Length: 218
Image (cartoon, rainbow, N blue to C red; front, side, top):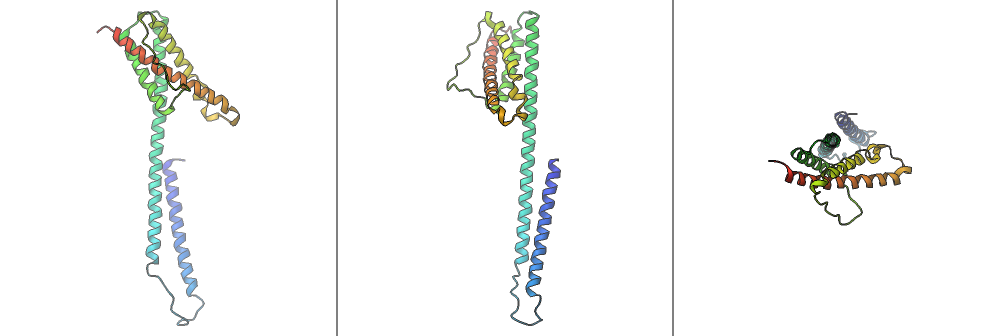
């Protein structure tokens, strides 16, 4: 069901409820004056403001419903935007990983300008994923990853590719919607591994970007 249909149904229900409430009020007033001959007994105590008050209550209910529907629509849009961004970042990191791996397999000379751009983008997108995942490790203080030496660049790039493989293939990211009560312990373990891999990707890609930036030819 769409958000617009839900909003319409909510407003329709409130309008029906308000109308029903008004009908009950009218019936109640009619019953208090029925069954007595005209002029018998004291005159009925009719509050001239009752209709105004009821109308204000109904208007407040409708206004509150409209505000709630508006908030739900905004939340839905924010959620959809977050999902779209995560899918884009997740896919793009894998594409960049494949580009790096392809050049390594072909044993092409390292293009430090290209590597600087690729690792910088991996770092940016992995960091944005972490905004939603809130990755953390059990270690209170995490060591900074030193910049690899020139002769260590290939090994560091291979390690980055393996980290991305481990992260993107993690069941915690693929099967989050199908976890049952029996698989909670395993799901927590998978999530911990995903957190560790993502943080390692962020740190290693940052170190590689700095080293490649220093080695790139102007």
